[in-house]
Length: 238
Image 1 (cartoon, rainbow, N blue to C red):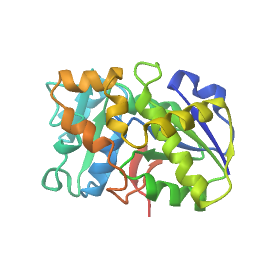
Image 2 (image 1 turned 135 degrees about the vertical axis):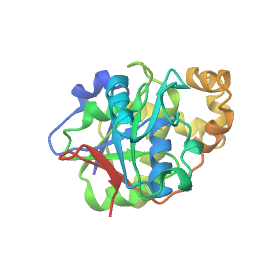
Image 3 (image 1 turned 90 degrees about the horizontal axis):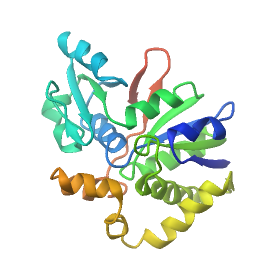
Image 4 (image 1 turned 120 degrees about the vertical axis):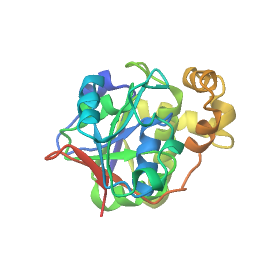
C-alpha cells in the first residue's frame, strides 16, 4: 500500500493519481463533525460548497448545518460543532452541510475511485477499512483557505502509524515524512502541540475549546463515512 498527503486542496492535483482512495480530513472540525452525525444516526450528509446552495436546501425543509470562519451561519439550524448534531436532531435525517474548508475539499476530491471522511475519532476503523479496500491512499487536507494547517497534517502522521502497524506501507512523498515527524513530536500530547496553531486560536476566540478536545480524541467512533459520486451524498460505509 502507498500513502501520500496533499497538504492543502490547491495542491491536490499534484498528488492525484488514477484509482486513488482519497481521505478528506478537516480535523478542526468538519470531518470530525460529519463522523459524529453519522454515528448519531443521520441517514446521509449532503455536502455543499456554497452558502446559496445550502439556503436553497433550507427553503425546501432540510436540516442545514452551515459555518463560515468558525461561526454558525445565521440561517442554519446548526454550525460546525459535533455537539450540535445530537441523535434527537439528526436521526434518520439527511443533513445538508457546508463549511469554510471541509466541504470544499470534498468537492476537490469527489472524482476519486473512493472518497472517505477521516478524523481522529474514527482513525482505527478507517485504517482497517483501507487495509482491506485501498491500494494507494491520498490524505487530502482541507487546511484553511488553501493554506496548510498543523492539525490535518498531524492526522496524516497518526494515520501512517496505524497503517504501518497493520502491514507494509510505502511512503509516497516528503509530505508524508513531514507529517510523520510532526506526529512523533506531538503524539504524547496533541492538544498541547496544537495550542500555538492558527486554527486552535480561532476555536478559542469563538468559545469552542471543548470541540478541540473532542476532535483530538482517537477511536471514539467506528463509522467510516463514504461519498457516493452518483447522488453526491455521504453515508456510513457498510
